[in-house]
Length: 325
Image (cartoon, rainbow, N blue to C red; front, side, top):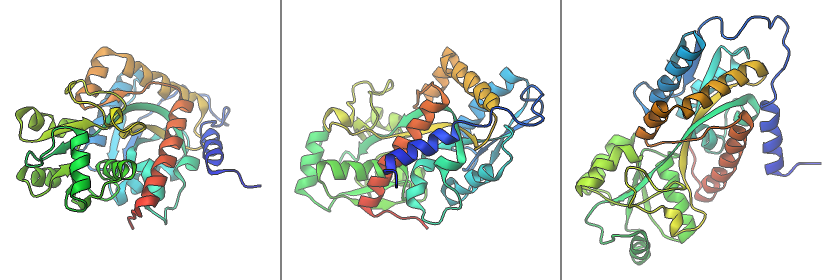
């Protein structure tokens, strides 16, 4: 008998989160040599910054180097597949990102199943986007924008960092939930899209909060709302979209994963030290500076989040017919 999709995903995540407890030859304290933490994106990007931040903490706490390796390409899939194929010994880890939960639906020819093949280790933070418009748009609140968009169906251009990016999906989810029509303009990255928003070539964007907060404060852009579950600490006067559109919530996620079958002792060690980082005031402040909200918890908690996000975005991607090949 076939399991319903949700039950199957939870079962797969549960299996990945239950690694081998006893492994032949597992007698040395972990780690006793350098650990490689892979990210599927280039240096200097958001995932690289997060990887180096948590990597430095783990190096100091565990007494071994956590070497950050950037393996960009195919929307993060190259780096992910490298970890899937690695030995499940705790010495190759993955910096899990929002791309991992959407790529299962965006790409139809992946050589791995993320939920099945990567064991959740620890959640780190969630990062909401900010809904920003060019000041030429005659709307000062989200309800006013929705009314304006309905009156100008198909005439408002929404820029994004690319197909399947969090900003793209944030806009698609809003379109679905409030019944508006926007023209999507995918760019090759957040920077070029933001440049055109500032210049008025496009009217709307859902960029990361840190990249636009100064433009909003200076009035060069108008912030309407944040996409997360709670208001931003840096722009506390901005409401969440969910305050007007119940159930709406979009936040990128970051965490740590490992190849399926990684020993339970390793996962427990990394999870414990990651949670210690999130509880440290100075470390938490650094995550907040990146626009994030820390998400401490168990490996099972992180696995549950991955399943829920994978299922949520599969529906949006299918409904909007978004594909990346």
